[in-house]
Amino acid sequence: GQNIDQPTEMTATEGAIVQINCTYQTSGFNGLFWYQQHAGEAPTFLSYNVLDGLEEKGRFSSFLSRSKGYSYLLLKELQMKDSASYLCAVRDSKAAGNKLTFGGGTRVLVKP
Amino acid sequence: KAGVTQTPRYLIKTRGQQVTLSCSPISGHRSVSWYQQTPGQGLQFLFEYFSETQRNKGNFPGRFSGRQFSNSRSEMNVSTLELGDSALYLCASSFGGRPYEQYFGPGTRLTVT
Image 1: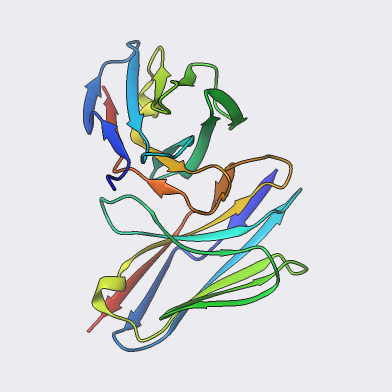
Image 2: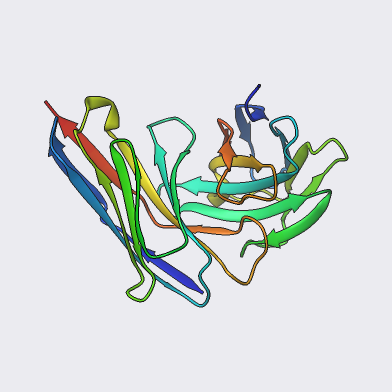
């Protein structure tokens, strides 16, 4: 089975940086995803890591260490619109296609 | 290009009834995945269909079933509804070859009373 842990809630100030950690334990690993979900809306894809290292995409970066079962999502220059839940998800290596296991999500509140 | 559409958006059912939800993927997408989202359990994978075949299945009872049509539209059915089935049901579509490009629909909010 798979177990994914991430903090429940984080608060940060507009313009600051926030790092959301995600640890996972899986029987097989074939990629880690980060999604953003605003209240009442559908999740939207942010990033995908399958190899170790940092992937940067504008204000958002995602890091993966497969040996440590660890990832983080870094949000820079926080804006009020970044207030949302951030979901970490792992893809099972034994399954073809899109079988993803999600963590409980981290609710980020950006304050002025 | 139109996004993923789900119908209905809201539904209220009674315990013991059955319900069918529909998902129309983005044009050209062949994979449709279904998820259940609740405050307590978060987002949980139900199943995935690709080219009319179930490719993956989550850990849900047999009351949850689905199918995909030749035009890639998908339906999921829940029989003998229980109070715990109240949730947001999301579908996500992707082309099929690149698993990280999954696009979610707005969801169907199911309330079981």
